[in-house]
Length: 222
Image 1 (spheres, rainbow, N blue to C red):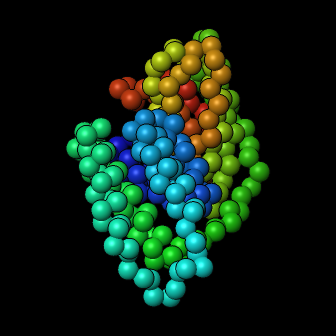
Image 2: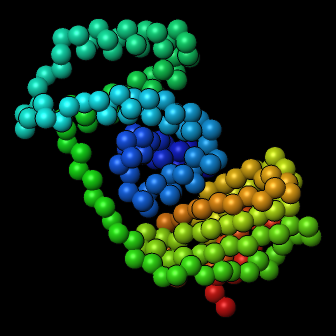
C-alpha cells in the first residue's frame, strides 16, 4: 500500500468512526484496514471520540453555531498534555488533528451525507488458471458503479507471508485491490474493492509485495 493511498484512506477514518461513510467507501476502507495496522490503531482511538460525540444534544444546535465554551480550551490542552506523556509526539499530532476535525464537524452540526445506491449485476465466479500445488483459491467478482467488488477465499499460502491483490488491465498495468497476511491451512476470506470497472480489467491476481510475478491469476473474460 503506497503512502498516497494510506493518506487518502486516513482521511476517511473520522467519517467511518461516526458510521457516516457511504457503503462503497466503507468497503474500500475496510480492505485497506485489513493490511494497515497503523490505520486500525488510529480508527480505534477515533471511535472513542465518536462515542463522546453521540452525547451531544442536537436541539441546542442553531443555524449560527455558538462559540465553544470557555472550558473547552483548558479541557483540550489538558487532554493533549496527558496524551503527549503517554505517546510519541508525532503520533499525538496526528491524533489531535483528527479529533479536531471531528469536533469542528460536530460544533457546526453540518453533516451532509449522500447515500449512493450501487447498481450491480450478480456476482460471478472466476477460475484461477495459475495456482501453485497445495494452494486453493476461489473468487467472485461483481461489477459496481464505482468499480469492481472482489470476494476472495484462499487456503494453503505460507503462513505469515503478506500478499497483494490486484486487477490487471489488458496492457499489463495493475490497480491494487488490497493486501492480506496468509494463514497457511486456515481459510482466508476477504471482501475487496478496487476503483476499476470490470470492462477495463483483464485478470485478477495475487503476488508478493517484493515480486510482481503472479502466484495466482484468474482471467476475468473468456
